[in-house]
Image 1: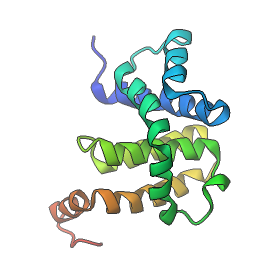
Image 2: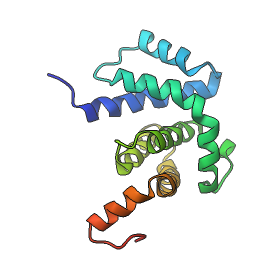
Image 3: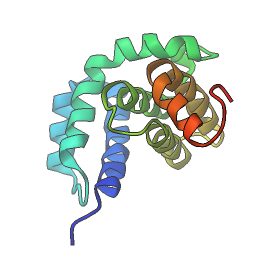
Length: 155
């Protein structure tokens, strides 16, 4: 039985969080870390292509993503835990590079990653920062979503 795409992508994000955490620690290239993960671990029911893209592309885009996220943070990037950094980068990358992923899904998935692997209240930071970032990069989608629910934009 084929695994649903959404489940396979959720698992890809989970593995990517661990790989990006590792990247923060040892600064190997995303491609090297991706290769290690694919060869050293059983990535069962994972969208491996999506995992590889996240782990390969996020380190390349990290400086730009951090600069874009900065105005939405109440603390310095260096004060954000490594798990939260990884989740923020995954969420920001998806919001900016994957318009086919609904903004709510990108935010929710990042929040769930931090609930699973991060500090007890870390998800609040992720939710707030990515919500503000989504308004910046996906404002039209957010407005359309709000209108579709019968609420005025900005509510």
